[in-house]
Length: 74
Image 1 (spheres, rainbow, N blue to C red):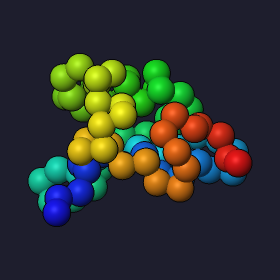
Image 2 (image 1 turned 45 degrees about the horizontal axis):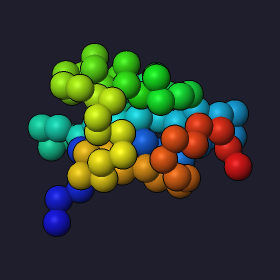
Image 3 (image 1 turned 90 degrees about the horizontal axis):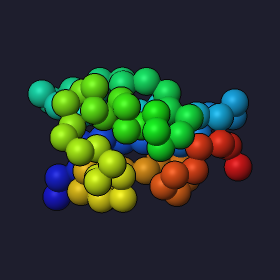
């Protein structure tokens, strides 16, 4: 089974979630997102066409350590 190429990591204690994309056999950090808008901007800048449409698609994005769209530490 293939993993989702985009990973939104667990929220940091200060808020925000690191975002990585896996391509060419390695992970690349896109930045720290503090909202869905930040995530969409990172994905668009990395070449994802229509990034809004994939936020809830687990074939594209794996949300780790907290549910989708949760940006602050619990």
